[in-house]
Every structure is written in C-alpha cells, then in structure tokens.
Image (spheres, helix red, strand yellow):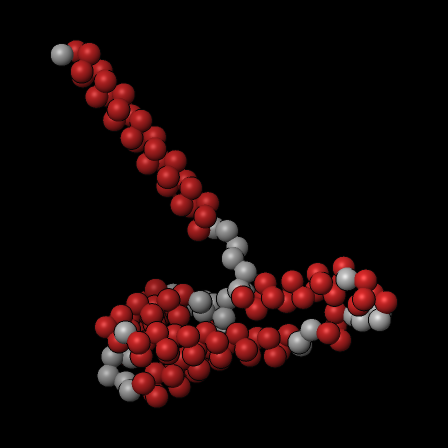
Amino acid sequence: MEKNSLNLEKLTFMIKEIEKKNNEFENFVSNLDVYSRANMLNEISSNIINNNKIFQELQLEQKTACLPKEKVEKSQVNNLIEQTFLKIQSDSSKKVIFLRAFLDNLKDVSDNDKNVILNSFKNKSDDEIKEELSNLVKIFKIKE
C-alpha cells in the first residue's frame, strides 16, 4: 500500500513537471517573432539580390529591385482585411473569432477596446464591416 502511495506521488510530481515544462514551452513559442508573409518575401528577395552573381554583375541594388515599403505595407493591410472578410463570409457563425483575430493584429488595441469594437460589429452588413476594418487599420496600424 505504501509503495503504491509512493508511486502515485512520483507520478503526480512527474505530471506536474510535464505541465510546468509545457507551460514554459507555450510561453516561449508565444513570444517568438513571426514574420508576416510580406516581410518574409522581402527578406528572401533581398537575400537573392545580394547573393546572386547575376544581380551583382548588373550592380542591381535592393532598393531598385524591391517594392517600396509603402506599397508592401498597403498590400499587407489589404490582404489582412480581405482575408478576414473572406473568412467571415465563408463561416459567419465564427464572425467574432475572425474579427478578434483581426484586432489582435493591430497595435495598441486593449481588450476593452476589442470588446467595444466587436459589439459595434453585431448589426452591421458585410460592406459596413469591410469599411470599418479599413478604418480601424488607419487608426491603430498593423503590428509588424
């Protein structure tokens, strides 16, 4: 009986340690910087331009070969809005989830702000939602 109790305590301790390590891992992963698609493509393009002999022979610089930052940012904004809007249209029952994910991509939006914004979307048409998403991006800007 005492041996079973000791084994149970060991098992409980091991489970708690695994849960602790799992939480540490989740925190580590959640704090990693994740490049946006546009940033990743821009970095890949830069590496190709900087490390390719053909481009070096042409003396092509990154500045002349890559899109200006403003165009990349505008494309990011449009993609984020369009993706969110398409998700809402494909499954309107998850509208709040998609809108919350959209708001998570914006700078300086507090949880209270998110709740107020989400409540304001309840009775809006699809066109109104798309317009509001554009307005929100202008106000809060997208996280990098």
